[in-house]
Amino acid sequence: MVHLRSLLLLSLAAFLFTSCRADPDPLQDFCVADFQTGITIDGFPCKPASNVVSDDFFFGGLAIAGNTNNMFGSNITAGNVQSFPGLNTLGLSINRGDFAPGGVNPLHSHPRASEIVFVIEGELLVGFISTANVFYSKVLKAGESFIIPRGLVHFQYNTGKENAVAITAFDSQLPGVVLAPLTLFGSKPAIPIDVLTKTFQVDASVIQLLMSKFGQATTPYN
Image (cartoon, rainbow, N blue to C red; front, side, top):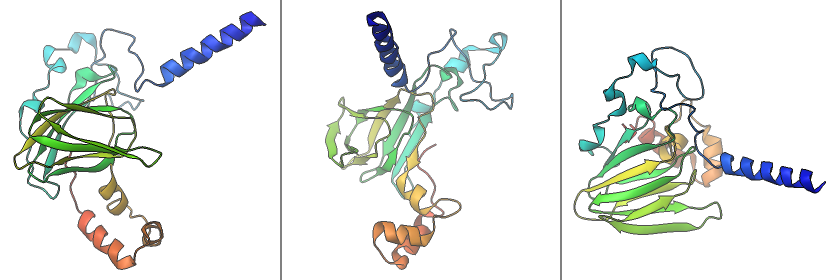
């Protein structure tokens, strides 16, 4: 009985350890994503090793400043598996965020990853809200970092008078992003207005105004 109990405890510990990881461990040195097969799986199939080249492991997008001329005043350059196929199965990705003064990466969440924000230039107010409805935040300057736990709603906002740049890293090859304003007021098809008026306790005219604003909005993510 003691042996069985120990075995169960070890099995539970192993399950808890593995279940907290965002992506599964790879079973080979690498698995460069093959977008040409047309096969849909939880991830991407591997390109044949004979077709893999050095450029599959290279991504230069973070060296280029993003265009912040949009309604949010920000631009997010995503270095995930879709633009950086060598990340496939490796459980990590990296973004660049550019922010004009007053620019914001609006309230959003990443359902598949935790995030670390590292400021390169300028200053950013970075914050998230816990499931206990507690708001945690910090104004970061160049060289400082802040952690965003997986799945929690958060934002980055340029509080300075100059442009700001940040690098964000994730423990998933494809973190996903749910942008609150575009999700709530720009979904296709639209969420019924009655649901939104009851949720936010406002008149239908307010919801219609928000839908007109975000219905055709473009995401700052590229």
